[in-house]
Image (cartoon, rainbow, N blue to C red; front, side, top):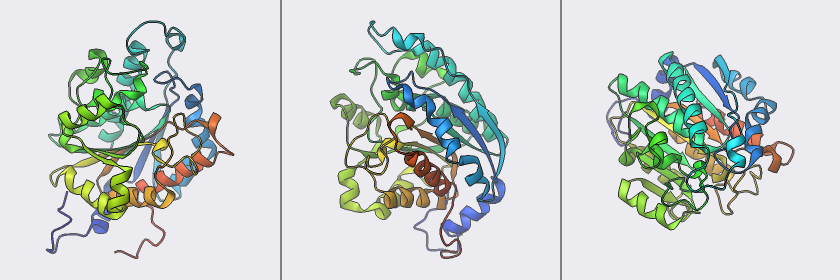
Length: 331
């Protein structure tokens, strides 16, 4: 990745994006109808709602080719109804799905496509990040993780109040948590804390605060956004990921958005990103030319109004892939 502060004749971010686009002009869509990481069954309908919002058609309108569409089988739900025991819920089922998803994401990246994993609850990120990490590891490369979320998702079995795995995937990806999940893919951690940015948080459990500090995660709350503004904050995120990374994984929980514009989520929290802030953040990331894998998760059509949140999510995915209103303006 080029240092964006460099004043030499190196390519601008927009030029870099154009170069990368020539290499990665195909997308793999991976649908994961998962809800057992949480307690909201409507999350399993997220992929269907994104199809109704014409996700494949909108991506192809940008000039991408959809090289493959894959739908993973929904895991057995019996574990979710047996919630009387202590500890995280449905770990064997989520572990199995994570291994399968990791392979699909890795295969997609090896084939020079951009995998977009559509959920489903955020526990799916255990698998998608594992797949991305394996791709980079075997190529002796490094990557950064940008995690958009109202919540920390960095609980462990020792700190969780609910046992829901969708509150743990960031911790798992950083090597903390149930060993079955931590060891998905056969290695841990999947990504370094110093190359991880948590964006838009406003509802964090006290133990999560300590783990964020311990692991060296760069966390940006909504207060930070209000103080810095999105342009400055997003530029800072790019800087913190490092100038030696070969790719960025974007994991976008739609509940990072304010529920007034994105009501179709399972765990809404007031005071989130507005429409323009979210698009600007994703646009700045896209301009680096380094966004190589993407998650969009926690869409819950049962809470939505006329599929408006799914349509918003599709628009945000377009921006993450490099769509701009005036493509030549910054060239």
